[in-house]
Figure (cartoon, rainbow, N blue to C red):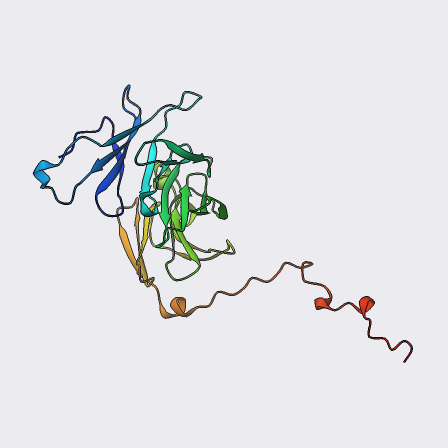
Length: 272
C-alpha cells in the first residue's frame, strides 16, 4: 500500500517498461493538485518497495487564483513526457525526471473529460464539455480536426483500422430524469476522421455515455453510461466491408474547364 494522497486520485498510468507509474490527484483543503511518480523495480520484492513517490509535481493555482483539477494522465512514447489534461480545458506536458513543465496549450474552453490515443500514439483525441472532440498530432501538437456535437462529449476513440471516430456523451446527468433518450443525445456517434462528417449513430442507452472502448481488432466496441449499463456492440459485415466515399464538392467549387482552356489553345495552324 502506497502513501495516501492528499486529495482524491483521478488517474493512474504505467510507463513503458513497467518500471514506474504516475498518479494524479485533486486539490484538497490547503493542498494543491499533484502528480506523483513511483518507481517499481523489477528485481525487488514488493515488500521492499518504497511507498514514497520518487517525484511529486505540485500543480499550483492559475494566475487568476483558480485551482486546477487534472482529469487524465498518459505517458508518451519512450516515457519522454507525462501528458496531463485538466478541467480548465488545458493540456500540459511534464518532464518525468525533473518535473519541469515542458508545454501548455488550450485545445478546449471547458473541461477535458477524456483523452484517447491511437495504437502507435501518433494521434490523440480529446473529449470535452464544450460539445467537441478534437484530433491532434502527438509529435507537433498540431490541431488536425474537430468533431462538433450539441451535447457534452464524455469519451471518443479512434478506430484501429478505419478512418472513423466513435464518440459518446449526452445531456448532463442532472437533467436525465426529465429527458427522453432521443432528446438527450445518448447515442454513440460515428464521424469520418478526415472529413469530420457524422455518418451514423447507435442508440441503446438512456443516460449519457461516459466511456467507450473499441476492440483492438476493430470488430466490436463497448460503451458504458450513466444508466448503469455496459453495452457490447458487434459491427455487422456491411460496416466492416464498407468503403468510405469521398464527399462531393459543394456547388460552385467544382474545378472549371477540367484543366483545358480554349483561350490558351496554341494548336492553331498559323503559317501552315
